[in-house]
Image (tube, rainbow, N blue to C red; front, top):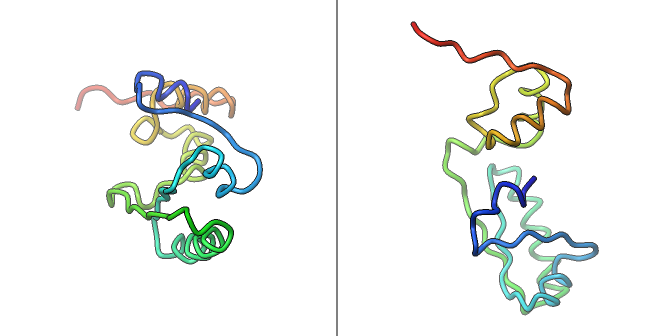
Amino acid sequence: MIREVVRSYRNVEVDSLEGLLVDYAKKRKATVIVRGLRAVSDFEYEFQMTLMNRKLNPNVETIFMMPNESYTYLNSGVVKEIAMQRGDVSRFVPESIARRLYKRFGVVPHSKKKGP
């Protein structure tokens, strides 16, 4: 699904990995890992992972980025729950992903209201 969504971006590559992220970074000759932090609760886990990664490979730095506040509450579980309950997820995911979610959960979404 990610490949489908970013297909039009020439500077984006989608890949997967097995094993440690720092080993993958070394294999790809990456020196920086960019991680997102939505909430303070994310920070504790990410901080521990960063310190461990630094011990495993001190040549790889981690940079944290904060999302726009309109996305801080958003995660895959919330989006899946909205889709399962026939809610409109089109504000949170691309339309192709919304269709896949509705199909996966066997639901027909509420139609968008038209008019006043």
